[in-house]
Length: 138
Image (cartoon, rainbow, N blue to C red):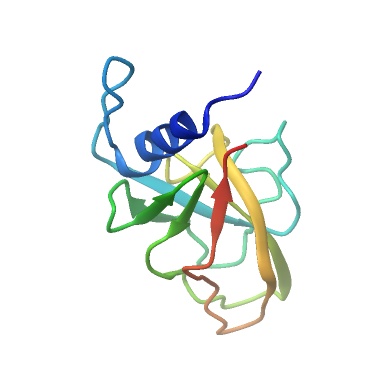
């Protein structure tokens, strides 16, 4: 069984822009947290699975508003690029991102996706997710 296309849009609006779905759920203001990963965290993983750990790394918050996310049909994209702190040590390649509800820890992951192109992190490199970063419901 799958959701209707209209409900997929409503569901993504609820999660990403705190838009109320009448008679179903009320949106609550807040933020979602983006994380970077050096491997696919997988559907069974959590937000800390394969999460980057370079020195200075920290998850980045994005407001649950239309200023933070754009919902169109069954897809949601970042409205603006999100920069992570610059690396001051190890080299690694970041291939995935995840979206969750807290700033740190092994907590539930809402969505994950592939970073395209992957990000090679070396000293003084500032990883960035661009407005083309998206997730889909379907």
